[in-house]
Image (tube, rainbow, N blue to C red):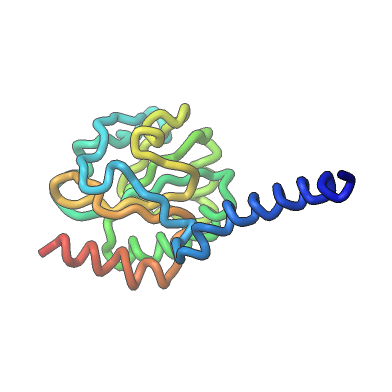
Length: 177
């Protein structure tokens, strides 16, 4: 009987490891979370800007041409890592709009002043409701939006040069034609 009691916790640990390892063993990338909004219109929204004088961001501004929407926060370490790449992409003409997620506008302004501002427009989502409607799991997340205002791709995590050059930029080019 004692021997059986020893085997129960061992069996539980083995089962838990199996459940957690299953997606990796199947070859699934844990960063490629499905989006229920893929190929659907972006949710309607209107967000205030960083200051009283700035215009903010609305869903209507994101239609008419393919572009990127980056959900970020000043308190997010991966966001700090990806911002130089975003600035470089913006300088190359890539249209990027930002949604400041659960962030203080003053902290967002300081973040962008220190690291660079790649955004053509920024909306402040203080309570995170718009991010929830986009299906955001955490920051940063970047979305490719087509000219009709539909979500065509979602990248979870910090943007890398490889992801930008192999996935996002070719998709933006295809959507522009």
